[in-house]
Figure 1 (cartoon, rainbow, N blue to C red):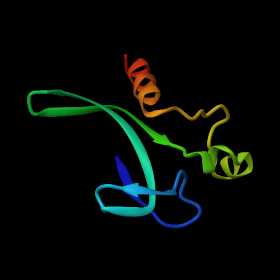
Figure 2: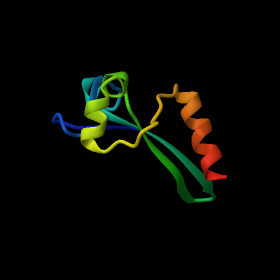
Figure 3: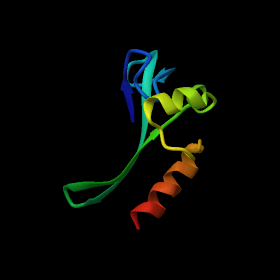
Figure 4: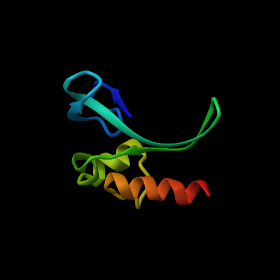
Length: 87
């Protein structure tokens, strides 16, 4: 899930391709885990993806309050981590 965002103080914002917009834009990327039964979806996990431009700058992470130890995962690893936390 992408969220278009502006400014230098929004955590995780970086230029990337946003398919919903059909162009490159400054966006935040969220990884979610949703369970559905019938017509009732329930979100059980949501995690903000931090791109390398963020994780490579410890001072920036500290300034916005990102907890120590936040790691960068490929999409598949982020999904597995969300599933483990949800169970």
